[in-house]
Every structure is written in C-alpha cells, then in structure tokens.
Image (cartoon, rainbow, N blue to C red; front, side):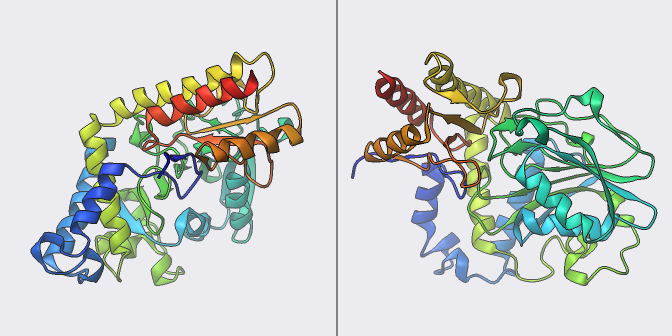
Length: 358
C-alpha cells in the first residue's frame, strides 16, 4: 500500500507504535485471555491501566497535587454545559474570550444557563488573531473566564494566557494539550477531547483544581457533577475503557519521545516546514492566521482562487495526503500537525507544495 500522510483535524493520527502495541494485546491483554474491551472496569487489570493514565498525565503536565484528573464522556462539547451549570450562579457572569467557532459554541451553551459577557474577541478580523492581553475586559462578578487555547478551524493559538486572580481561568485545550509545556496552576479547569493529541475519540480529560469541587452543586444532576467523578476516580459508572487504554498507550509514547519539551521542539520543526512553504511562495499560498498568532497544530491556508484550492486538494489526495480540506465553514486548506504526525509527513507536504506551485 502506498504511503498515506494523515493530516486529519480529528479524529487524527495516532503514534504507530501505540497502534502496534494495542494490536499485539488486542486479543489477550495482560494474560487475561480477553481483550481490554472485554474486561470489567472494576478488575485489577483495567484499574492498573486507568491509574497509569492518570499518573502519566500528572507527570507529563506537572499537575500539582491539588488538582484532580478526570476521565469523562460527552466530548469537550458537554463541558460547554457542565461548566456553567456548576459555576454560573446568580449575580455571577460567565466571561468568554472568543477566538473561533468552538469558543462561540461554548458561549452559546452558557447563555442557556446564566448571564454571560464577551471579555475579548477577534471576530471582527475573521478570527485571524488572538486578543491582546491588555485589551481583555474582566469584572469582579466573573464566575470564570473561558478560552479556547487553539483554534482548529482558523489556525490560531494562544501563545500566552491571561494571568488572572479574581476568577478561575478555564481552557478548552482539545486540540493542543500536550503540544507544549503549560503552567497548570494558571488554570482552574483544563479540559480536552482526546481525539487530537491524546488518543481516539470517546474520552474527555478534565483537570480541575480541588477547591472548585467544594462548590454547592445540589441543583446539578449527578452525572453532570465534577464531584461525582472526582470522588469515584472516574469510575462512578462504566468509563470508555478502550479509549482510556489507548490514551495510556499514547502517553507512554510521549514519555518515550522525551516528554512534552521534546514534543514541543518537534512540533515547532514540523510547523516551520509548512509555514515556510507558505511564506516563500510569493503569495501563491496565503496563510489565514496572522503570523504572531499562528498555531503549531492547525496550519490554514488558501491558494489564489477557490478553484485552485480544489485542484490542489485533488492532486494532494492522489499523492497520499489525507485530510487537507479546510473546515466546511471556511473552506480552503488545513494541515493538522498534531503530536503524532511525523516530521517526515510535514517534509513531504512541504515538498509537494513547492512542486505544485512551480
């Protein structure tokens, strides 16, 4: 079979070694004679996987002891509701920083529950940039401040986060968690759907500061309470066991690469290969994002016309490049260079882009 270069925006590429290890264990995990998918989530064999995944995340992200790591379901989209239903109380305001479609969707859900405000937005320039930190509007009535750290559709990413103390900072890191080191202590909550940098779809990671688990949530349904899952180590009901198993395999791979610092170095190298092809094309390729706001994870660009985009994408597909179509809402082209996308794939895309232009 000819080589395939997977640039899908999500679900996306997984490390080959993680897939191979899962394949080896698929029918007989830990000498149980069963697949990990068949094991009871109460079994010691599965609980070892579950705990290893939690411990590995804590190690890789240097998560302090006063934070809990939860494995939930419903994707990041369910978090759009879980957060305000728990923390957006009377006389409080949910403060949302808008940088793209996913932060807009988070705001939309919060509006169904309580009062909201927009503390910063770059919608007026087509989401080509990130709000200037000095321009953000904060208020003492903020229940929390919410942002999306990386914007898959528009190809922008926060390089620095607002340093706030009057309310918890909450970040949707679905598309760039583990792509670079972060200071977890800047945040009250970090959440991320797994299907880009952590593993397959089906599990959502939530990292939550313990003091936020002391809120009065007597009005919240049991399954929507963070307390429920924190108190049971995310085993209140049957978790997505295979997705967590694969998450654990991916975390093992990250450690083998040298950890998050080594992953960041590789991500910078990969993104530069493609951004250079754009910048050195004399306008044949045009990046969507302003240079200072460019994402390491999603590289968005256009050719001179929409017809040119279509021809480029058709020929790229013939050469084995998968998933280069831009999001349906904006069109154009997008290369998603998540952690598991190898340098070689980005090098080959750069070569193709240069050859196609010539």
